[in-house]
Image (cartoon, rainbow, N blue to C red):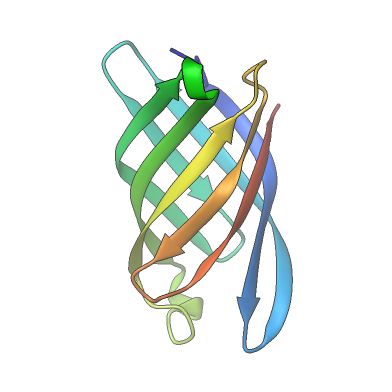
Length: 118
């Protein structure tokens, strides 16, 4: 089982009003033997996981972290970005120092995620 506990920095890429954007993002992972919890922050919102699990299949060379989350934008951003729910699928590097993947939401939005461990 990969041990991912700690602080992560990265970027989120997404499309908004027909334009591509890249935004700085940070993530805190708390992992024990019994659970894994993620907290993802941007300058506009905070996401908290409510379920997370690993998809590990060494024969197919898959090492993934998959989680669902709720996102709560700051009050000043809620008119353009209401509270929403989503999921993400992140591939785990062999050395457990990088996570790369994508997310999708119930608002029918999606984007890319890239993280490196601090």
